[in-house]
Image 1 (cartoon, helix red, strand yellow):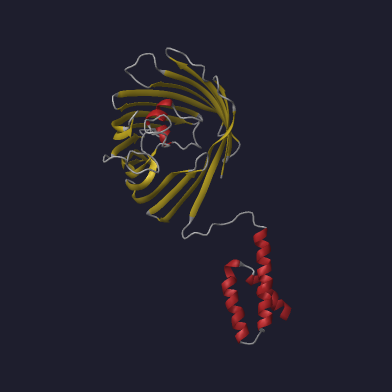
Image 2 (cartoon, helix red, strand yellow; image 1 turned 60 degrees about the vertical axis):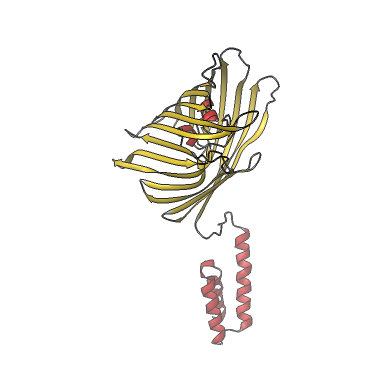
Length: 370
């Protein structure tokens, strides 16, 4: 009987949720002289050994934080075949991101996202204040509310690269202020309103930003204003417009303050397996006016598994100069192994007005996420 009693105590003690309660029971039994101190220590030792065995065989572990934490991330491994003199084909780690999100309460949330590929950099670092469907605040470093393609997550895009005009005019690789991954530091207010048939018909966001990009203090006294308005007249259609008004420090040989203004319109249509999307963006950097647009179509050959994509992409880096428009013809395919893994292939043909450059590009990219 005594062995059975000790066995039951050991079984309860080995369950983590009841560890503290069982320890109290053991202390009470010692005080009542039901068991000796040595017998209690023996039970604790056996329980500790069993817990170590359980920990050693665990396949998943919880993070200990003051509030619930959601950790996700993804990595993209790419192989490029550039058809350009002097360029070498090969592998690279395009992105390797860790994303931390959480809610402190129903009204307060946060996000931290870093990219560890190449030179590590902090991408997102902001707090959210969620008051109503129509009134929410985002404070910190985040994507600027401009352009559908800019706001699309890199691990969800149908094609591997964003359009030429988005790269040039929305704080990315070809922008005059350098590659800021489409982000800046500031404050945004936004939300959704006009609810009909269980969905909102209008989304909006307005932001005030430094205009200097990620991980950087403001370089002038001016603040940039950004706004985006999107209508959903029917369930499968998104119609939007964006406006950006700001001042940036750029230029050679000496950087100085220049206007940096943009506006854009967008259309997105998704119905069952079919997708159509397009954007037009025009911007003015100082005295130079740039513009571009793209049209994209896609179709899932196998539902949620295998998608084919085609895109026509046009960019004019300076409207005052003739014969400098760059056109890109893209075809691609994506196969989703599951929700966490996919492979993408793509081929781009570039055509330049005037002097043509041999710079076509083929790419294969594998993505794994968690």
